[in-house]
Length: 305
Image 1 (cartoon, one colour):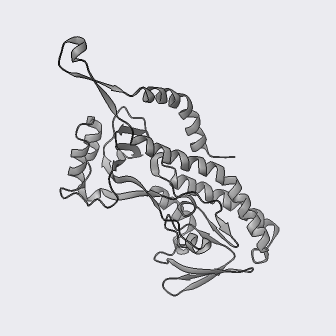
Image 2 (cartoon, rainbow, N blue to C red):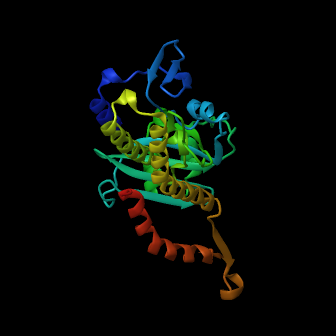
Image 3 (cartoon, rainbow, N blue to C red):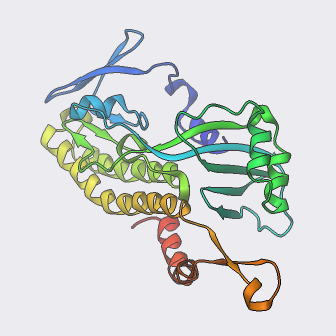
């Protein structure tokens, strides 16, 4: 919310139109005309389709809309007045279990934003006991921190939504129209990079358009130079976005296989009981992550030159 306020103040509220969904557009060699659902229409030199995972602009641009792919997880999210003393300021924690995981991050002012991902069919109904009670049961055997965060969140503040992404597409633009953000490459939220990738898209597209504006007046930019600028933008962004998109999918897939194994120690020690151990693959993966993850996350967070 804070970031949205900063961006809105920078753009100016007078330049933002709410409830102005695009219903159609027509692009030719000289301009692009946009038609809104309320009957209004506007002309411009380019159209930037940043209309999300179910993008109308993407559907119109390429003739068919890619159906969002369900991740097999429902996300429950909320904000709690809670902050563990041992967690660094603006820290980020992930708790992993089989077919479910929990993410908590500091958003300042003593508040934690949290996400509980639970593997469920997409059509599964809302729990009759409420989201909060359902989550307290679902994560009931987990550590106190998870239980406290859920417990300190109001029921009405918990949002439930199925998690989707889309397959990567090979190009994001055509003519005077270009896609960015979720409209071009909606990804799963496992690294929290969906919005970040959209902001990076904006930056690199802005640079390309600034370069065009320095060589032409806006109304005189030839179509071929616009498409060339869009192609440069795609080439600059495609590799990085594809890697992050793939890692987000992989992280979601691996979570479904996480589990501990039980070894019956009775015959060995002549006692009743079992020993809980992790699969050896997770020990190997943990070592690899310790080596690779810091470098990878630095590359993700710092951005690209």
